Amino acid sequence: MEQRLSLVTLGVADLERARRFYEDGLGWRRGNNHPEVVFFQIGGAVLALWRRDALAKDAGLPDAGSGFGGITLAYNARTREEVDAVLAEAEAAGANILKPAEDAFWGGYSGYFADPDGHVWEVAWNPEWTVADDGSVRLGKRSGP
Amino acid sequence: MEQRLSLVTLGVADLERARRFYEDGLGWRRGNNHPEVVFFQIGGAVLALWRRDALAKDAGLPDAGSGFGGITLAYNARTREEVDAVLAEAEAAGANILKPAEDAFWGGYSGYFADPDGHVWEVAWNPEWTVADDGSVRLGKRSGP
Image 1 (cartoon, helix red, strand yellow):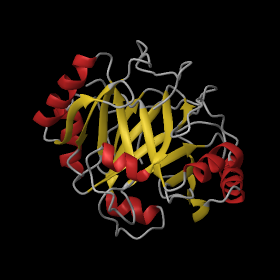
Image 2 (image 1 turned 90 degrees about the vertical axis):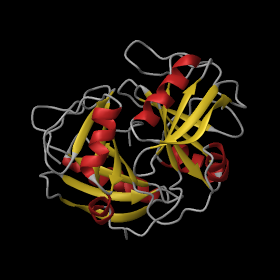
Image 3 (image 1 turned 120 degrees about the vertical axis):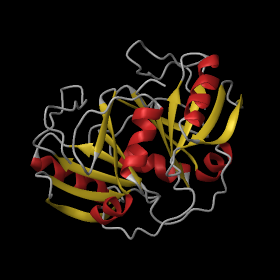
């Protein structure tokens, strides 16, 4: 198995509400046009929105989970100031701020929001990581938490 | 907020067990050297393994979830045959096969496994998507499910 990830799919209760949050709220540009699934190109991978019950069924799992799912997504901001700006933008778009940005124990600055379905995004500035012009991040020499 | 994802963090019960699965089992190469977090470079983003309780606490959430978390990760194989090979490799590494590969309703071929912490990976071949040499995928003209 090559060391890569092609797609992250967020199971959602209301596809139109989720689409609005990412497209209208955060200003992302949708990459497809299909009534049942929404795709966003994110670097060399794709973020998908799909009905949570359909996703669970497709994976052969009961759609019975609740609470923290054990996965977080993160957006590395280019500057410390961008962290606050992105959290404010997400809140204005309808996100729930789980933790306002604060100095992180690992030397950066970080906060968290949950999207309308409770999917958890960290917004972080990490002085040890560089965000390239194309948005990619690369592990450097020092890669502690 | 730029349209991108920097980091996916999988909360794990046993960091060493999770590291073994991805590094020794799937043959991935770790990108850091820290006792409490494991990083893997995945294209222009990073996959992290971190203690689930620490991750929940960092996000300001109770570590009380159970069942399907509503997020799946996916690996797009380069060929139909690679799907079966990757599922077999994952099973040999200790994964739980949630669904053996089968023809998918959207025209491809797909199966699912769960890693030792229950994180769900789809392994799929999508004839409509091209996996580039560097492992990236790009949404094409037709982007149905």
